[in-house]
Image (cartoon, rainbow, N blue to C red; front, side, top):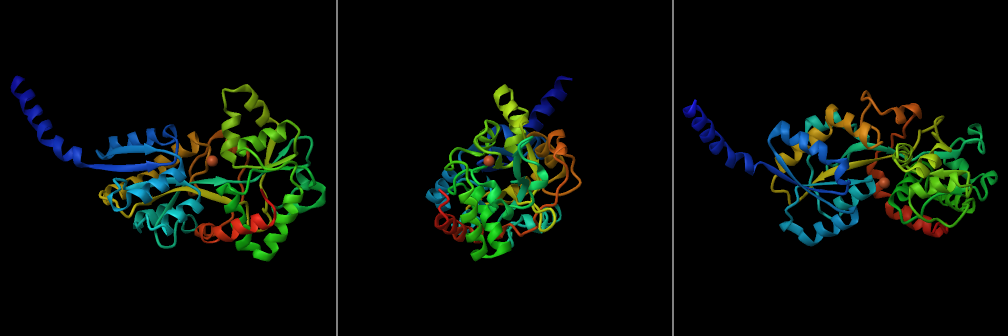
Length: 337
Ligand SMILES: [Fe+2]
């Protein structure tokens, strides 16, 4: 018995050094609670430990630029295809597309050159105040320029990447000229100068400042399941309308990840990417963070189920990045503050 214990200890001792060297350094713009439980699972399954640093997306990009080749980071997780594209064009990332990732992540939701892959989907539909707006009055993002919506729309500022990506998608589909005319008409219908985040637009609608808000669904999901009664009540006053269902589908974006150019643990970074795209991780994501899985056939939460299935825009999302500069300039010309 005693002998066995010594043998076990020796085995543990021998195994420890190799085990410790298996690691991956992750910079994440996702809040720790939205990613850590998955990372723990990954470590338990693979023996690869994850050193996690979380910060705001733009701060992480700056930090990576300052660190350059000496950066300890192997993998970057951030939200919005526009930001993932920024990391790519800044030379911070490298291609890392495996056959497994190709299988798990639909082509629309990853970079054409393999520099980033989407890990969850986020939808940005129209939300309306129940009882004040008849959903049959709504149809598309384009139709929000109609005079009947004058003074009735809440949306955040043009400095926000989600809006820049939405406008980039409109440019991709309708062209720059038509989108500029659209943006002018859209801005003319704003209920108030843009302020606050997506939750504030939903609250604005609930409190009677506007009848329509454009916001990402996970904010609404978060408010509906919030412990804060005021948020819950505000959210219960609005409903989701999926726009453009008779043509291209509702605008979607991703949160995703890039293997970094300076990665010292590239193989482990790819291992983690493949894990995050797996059925197991996708199911967790869809249940906990109110986003949609990156591919069909994965169960979603009851809140997401209650909004029904919808047609998603299949635009290749790297276009949101390439068209971002045009979108920003166009919104500025349209007077979108
Ligand atoms: Fe967000």
